[in-house]
Amino acid sequence: MKGTFNIDSPIGMLCITVEERCVTSIAVADGSICEELPTDEFGQQVKDELDMYFAGKAEKFSFPIRMSGTPFQLRVWGELRRIPYGSVATYGMIARRIGAPQAARAVGMACNRNRLLLAVPCHRVVGSGGKMTGFAVGIERKKFLLNLEKQKSRQPFG
Image (cartoon, rainbow, N blue to C red; front, side, top):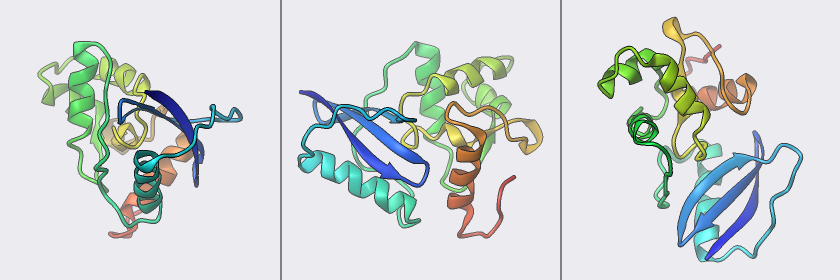
């Protein structure tokens, strides 16, 4: 079964797509509301975990996700999932970690194609020297998410 539902969040309305009890997309709706299906037990779990994240009470998600992309994108996204909560990595660091040290720009493109906002934390990737760089849903949202995660250490970004 494939379905979508909305979750209101501090960064805007999120549209969640679920297929066979796996989250396949978390996206900011930005003015459009996705088709709302009744939220079942799994949908409620996803909503509860995202609410806990935004409340600063959860650092990880336990709901299953399904990533779909090229082999390179999947390597990048897998590495993004290893960036600890409240930490950042640069595009160059990710490129080196996946064995493609010259591919920092390609890492950026893979981040831009990430369909699983928050669950695959592309917001934790910054430019060299910690510079705030592109984020598919806007730099202000990126700053918000990084600051949310840094609240424990009280070291704001940007």
